[in-house]
Image (tube, rainbow over all chains, first blue to last red; front, side, top):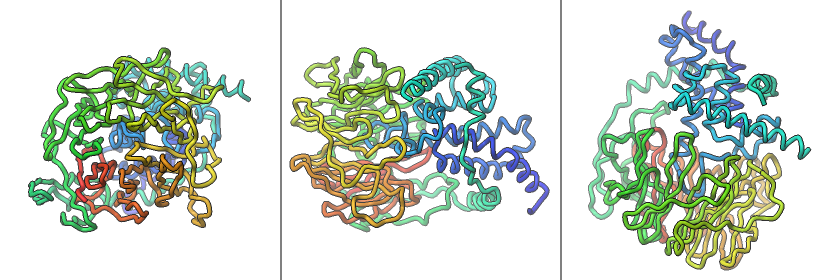
Length: 167
Length: 392
C-alpha cells in the first residue's frame, strides 16, 4: 500500500466489488469470464483516474458508468469488427454466451435481449440509476430509455412465462 | 413483470464468485500510466506491392502493452498496409471483399454516424445513396448492408448502380440483416421479430422487394438463444447457414440438411455446434465449437476451424485454437482471427497455420480473403479501427 490514496481506493473497490460483479454478470448474460474481464478493466481504469474520481459528487454513479461503457465498448468492438459478415454478429447472443449453462432463468432471459436493452435494465433496476443518467451513459434519449425499459420488461415477462410452461 | 419484481430478481440471483484482483488492478494501472507517457504517435512510410505508397500512422496509444513495431516486409509471404481514414471520421473498416479482390467495401464511422464506402488504392469513396454499414459485396460491385437504428436494430438494404433498395422483412418480422451475396446479386441473411426470433431468408435478385423464408424444421419453438440465419449462397443457389446452432445447407430446391461435423457437438449450455460463413468456390468455412474427435488437447474452450467441401459432402478440420472467426478462399485456404495480442493467421489449403505479419501497432484482425487468397482484408482493433490489407 503505497499511499493513503491507495488505501482509500482499495477500501472503496473492495466494498463495491460484489455489486459491480453482479452487474457485470447480468450484463454479460451469465458469462462469468467476460464479467470478470469487464470488472477488472473497470477497476484498473478507476485506479488510473482515482485522484479525480474520488472527488466526484457521485462516485458510485461514475463507476457504474465506467462499467457499462466498458461492456458496451466490448460489444461495440465485436459489432464494429465484423458488422455484417457471417462469423460474428454483435446484436445477438455471441458464441461464448450460448455455451454458458443456464444457471438461472432470469440470466437466460436477459441473454436474449440485445446488449443495449440489457444495459438499460441493469442500470435502472440493479444499479438504480435515474432515466436521464442512463440516457447519458448510453448516448440515447430519455424516451429511448423508457421505451427500451418497457420493451425489455415485456420480453422478459414472456420469456419467463414460456420457461415456466415449458417446464 | 413489474419493476419491483425485476429489482428483486436481479438482486437475488446466484452469481459465481468474482475473480477480480484489486492488487493487480493497481499494478496494471501504474504500468499503463507509465507507458502512455512514453509511446507517442509516429508516422512511417511503407512501400507496398505495386509501388503504391501508403502512409500509415501508429495507432493512438492504447492501454495495452505496446507491441514492438514490425517493419512492413514480405515476411511470411505477405505485405501489410494500414489505410488512413479521412479526418472527420474516427474509425474506418473494410468489411468485405469480393471473389476477384477488385471490390473492397467498408464503413466509416464517427461513433454515431456511419457511411458505407468502397476503398480503392487506399482511399474511400462513399456509396452514393447508401447509408449505414457495408456488408457483403459481389464481383459486380453490388453491396448488401444495413442501417442501424438508435435501438441497435438493423434495417438491411442492397445497393446496385447507385441505388439503395430496402431488404423486405417477412410478415411478422421487423429487422433484416444481410450476410451473403452471390454473383447474380441474390442476398441471404436473416430476419428478426420483435421478440428477437431470427429466421433464415433469401432475397432473390430477380424479384427486388420480395423475401423468401428458408425451410426450418417443423415444430420450432420460440427459441432465442440460438438464432437461425443464412450466411452464404453460391451461383447454383446452394445456401449455407445455421439452424438452432447447427450448420446446415439448403439445396437449390430448398431442402435443408445438416452439415457434417468433425466430432460430437458440445452439449453444455445453449448447445450451439458451430457456425458457417460464405461459400467460396465449392467450399464453405466456419467454426466447430469443440475439438475434433480423437483430439487429446485439454483446453475446453478450444474450437476447430473447419472447411466443408460442398461437392463431396465432407468436412475437414483445418486447425484447432481459440478462433473467433474463420473465412476462406476457393483455393481451400482460410484466415482466422481471435483475441490474442497477435490475433490473425492464414491457413494454407493443406492445413498449415502461418501467423500473419502485423502492421506496426499490432492488433490487426484478418477477416476475409479474395477467392485466390492473394488479398486479405481486415482491421485494427479498438475504437479507432483502421482498415488493413495484406497482399500474399
